[in-house]
Length: 65
Image 1: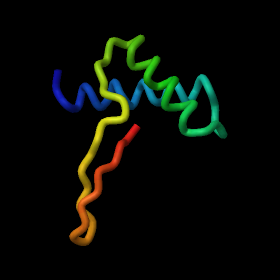
Image 2: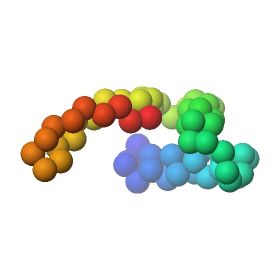
Image 3: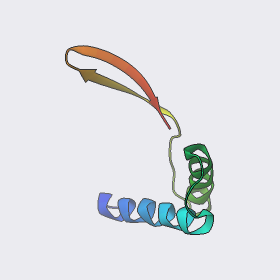
Image 4: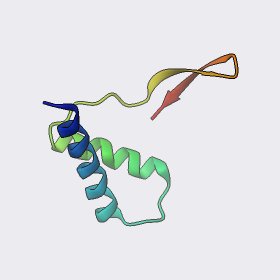
């Protein structure tokens, strides 16, 4: 599968979650529902993956999710 195809599927899943839930909820609600939607659509993902960031010479380890 091409990167563009994967991106379209992820964006589509995100839009589906937002349409279903509507606006105004906490990020954690959308994150949990997006994880479920990605599973439903058969899209593999890693939730809360660590990411090294260097900002102005300082290196930080962040967990994104």
